[in-house]
Figure 1 (cartoon, rainbow, N blue to C red):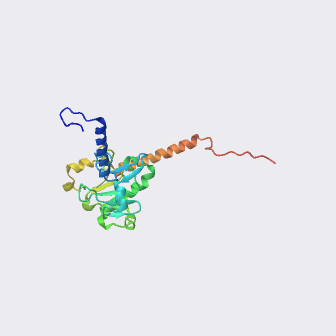
Figure 2 (figure 1 turned 135 degrees about the vertical axis):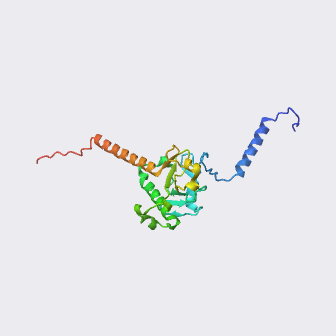
Length: 236
């Protein structure tokens, strides 16, 4: 048995065995499900991925699947619920059921989904918790939608890496001067490089759609078969 005295050096094999024991304890003491850290400064941002990049688990997907949070509105495309730390009392999140990593991953094909998110958000901001069914939401026309108490409504997205969850979501809230404060105005300032308004995001998607359309037209014009097939008529 090795002596316990000053200057004693532990044999390498004994040290390695002890390290393996500690590592095994750490592995078995934790949960089998990886912890989904949430927040701007979190590397995981509420989502855990497989090595091939596929989503293993997502905080928002889990909420949508298990209804872990009380839904203020839901349909087959989007869900509305309160954020963990609302900036003002009217603050809600509009979350699509489809997992899209962040606002930068929205493509031209997502214009309909984005418009739907905005319509639901605007309807909810107008009718509040009274709007709970898709029929009520779809039946409203834009001219019928007016903001509560004349306050402006913000419809915003945080740009990565300033998003808190890697599942795209829209923030909607009333511009209440008494509650918003300097921090809220700074955090959701759409003229900054960390936050975008709905109009800015939709304008980008519309531009992408035009670019794709122009590229398709240009490709068709360069194709040898663009003019269509030619036929020669032979007389009998």
